[in-house]
Amino acid sequence: MKATRDYTITSVKKALEILKLFNDQHTSLTLSEISEMSGIGKSSMLRFLYTLLNEDFVSYDEVTKKYSLGIEVYRLGLLKFNSLDVRKIARRYLQKLSNQLNMICYVGIREGDLLAMVDQILPSSVPAWTQLTVQSGGTSELYSTGIGRLFLAQDSDAAVERYLDRIQLKKFTDATITDRQALMELIRQARTDQFSGNIGENEPHIYSLCAPVYGASGKMVAGVSLCGLQDVVCSDQYDSYLEQICQAAAQISREMGYTPL
Image 1 (cartoon, helix red, strand yellow):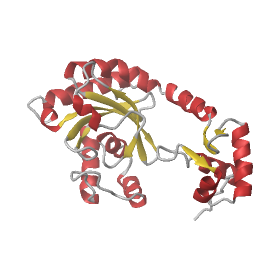
Image 2 (image 1 turned 90 degrees about the vertical axis):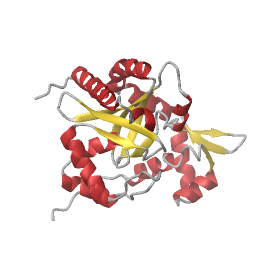
Image 3 (image 1 turned 135 degrees about the horizontal axis):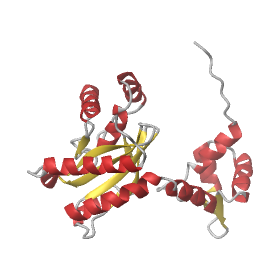
Image 4 (image 1 turned 60 degrees about the vertical axis):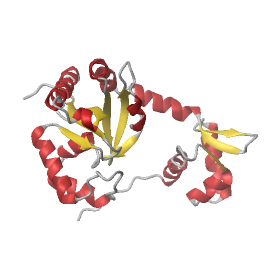
């Protein structure tokens, strides 16, 4: 087996790991908390935090003695978010569809082994049930989402098997599919059909119909979904809903420079 070189810079890696300690549950942390969570001693941690503070990647509150993410993280995140042209293009088509059907549309992209929801398009008259759904900016598992399974369908069976080997299959609702064989069959079916769906696997009773968006290179760059309550999606309008989200995905793909073979 050929050895692979590791170009990792340890200090940079540790600094990034410190930033990743901040999340929805830990928006601000003391020096002691950061040191304990990271396993880095306080004296060394102070040097890391001083550098991050000096570069505006963290901020410090003199009153609470707590650190939080700095403005530079926000600036870079916003730059990345605004560079997602697919989100801007998709919104033009999905907002009209969302208003027409009184359902939610999503735009999702793959980030490693996760699905990142980069946009959530709400209808002009927002139904109460939308409070049950994931918000824009959230992440989901690839295996439990229709868009995620479409991304997995772009890979070979062997690559999908490796993905399943390195993750933990968890149930989020009673409907979450965690059987490997069943998931492989769904992914292969998505590869054939060029659409997929979700049957309440992340939020109970919330179903979605999903289609892939392709870029100029011919690779899937995003997925879009039409989301609603189970009895609405699984009505006699099911085929119409599926056709409309697939049509929207095709229109977005064309604007992204995709030319079908």
